[in-house]
Length: 338
Image (cartoon, rainbow, N blue to C red; front, top):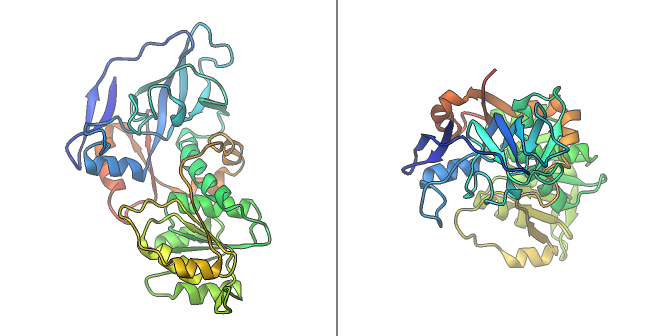
């Protein structure tokens, strides 16, 4: 069977690897879809995971069909459609330095337990859309870390899949007004399409001034006028995002960072103090991986708008190159078979 690994920096390798064997408590899943994540692209650019110093198996956004089950498995059947929790694999996180990646034809789920390692999904949910389960869990955890209230206003920086997912979750949670900030017009249009109330093009608009127009005026602890925005979510990872949020924060505002900042950032702690700004971070999905599944099923039409490209596994190398081209795609999902 074929599996995708990082190779030299900037390249991937499709390898022939042994077909996995199924232990008594394992499940074998034929991959039917797997999303390409920005993390994958980072591993490709580095030629693997930097601290491992060696190539790694790629892919951590899987959806597929069960084709074999171990003798002791009782609650999963051949033919079940499933989404997978890549963080629960005993051999290491799937596609993030563990022994296995999901960009392969067959994936063994070791010691498989429903609700921990995988969730069974209805056949009405297309596999390419089910592959959003993992990134939407990331987006949901980002929103959960911000603990939004329905009476509040929020701004999301970055209109990639995580930022757009966060905007969807904020609106599904009933947040009164959600703004999305980006510099790519097509992505801002997509933000409106998935339910954001307004967008800001930070390449030609003053973000703080526009937020004040949209959310009203408040103040920090020493009475300086600030937008009445309650919650700032960073899904961009750009230095300007933290600087803008901190300088704009009213008294008691909250800032949650999920965007990956590749270099240490200088932040203005004085501005944070006079806003009593709560600054936290978000990574992964401690509980959300299958909490999001029912909403993904219920709101398929909205989440489907995040996927811009579906590309067959046979063209995986060109798909990864396309996904890494700035501004060329939203979400790229690799599909396997019809």
